[in-house]
Length: 253
View 1 (cartoon, rainbow, N blue to C red):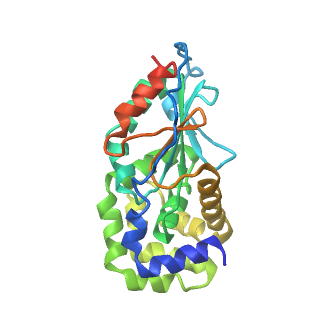
View 2 (tube, rainbow, N blue to C red):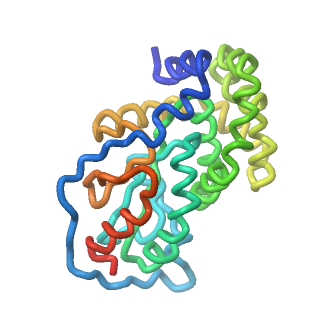
View 3 (tube, rainbow, N blue to C red):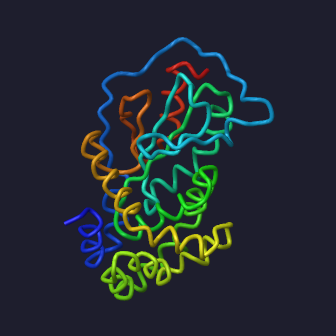
């Protein structure tokens, strides 16, 4: 059974639980603070800004900022996770404006998949140019209740969509969930989204990477943060002040 099929079957029983169960449950294992000398700011290439510079990494993360920044922040997040939405609303903008913009810090976002509806969203935010990944993800989190309510209200229809042939199931699931209208209002056409969602091997790869990386890095919930390769141990209720302190200790001051 592929990862997508196992996710699909789980979603039929309790999609709400899938959206919440692994959210905010990270139990990081950082043993000591990362410390370093202050690092110098790095100017972005002429006519560009680091907060608009995005590269897709070998691990299928979307790295925002200076790819050679000495301080590297990595977040594993689910697009259906309220705690991830809270960080997007209460930390991500300051992270980008005060740290990524300086060229001292890069910020890589990777998806941990919490069910088929999450997988559909993860593919849709990838469907445009790499530069649209972070803004579209932020829009999902900013409007999370609006995005998820139709999935919860139409669980039976959503489950039926997942029983369709591979090249149709996620196309129809997005239709049931009302995702096409939401993304069309933010610049992603329905035709473009349907083409992306019909690409079953690409979606299977997203799910498998999520599963493999979560096991290898012990990512047990979202959001989970790593700083220069080390998992941060954070109180889940207010992670940003702790992340900012860790960034400054690492030299972003």
